Amino acid sequence: MRLLTEEIRRRLPGLYETDGEDDPIVQVKFFATWCSWTWYATEFDGDNTFFGLVYGHVAELGYFSLSELQAGEGKLHQVERDFHFMPSRLSEVRRIHRARVA
Image 1 (cartoon, rainbow, N blue to C red):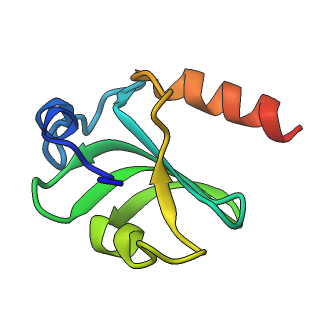
Image 2 (cartoon, one colour):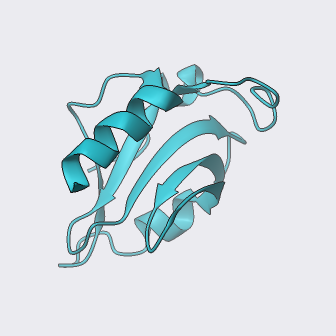
Image 3 (cartoon, rainbow, N blue to C red):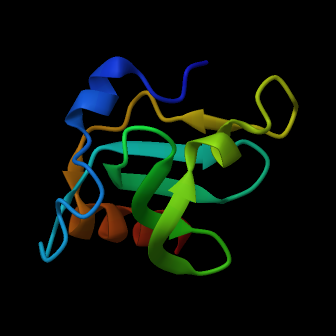
């Protein structure tokens, strides 16, 4: 499965383009198939680096890389893109994610 399509690449603002926005739009969601880690991207440098919300051990805004997400391709432990995810405001993603894990 391709984690990042050309359509999604075009939709994602470049790094720092949403800097200062109170509630940017999350364009794509990735999730680990073997645990609860989830990555929500709001920006992309066009090559390898995303910025967005990461739910891992804690929830935090930060950078993550496409190459790290792709590292498990074809293995039991891999990351997939959520085909059903629709671009949403960051505040809405936080609200929905909290409701699912509560």
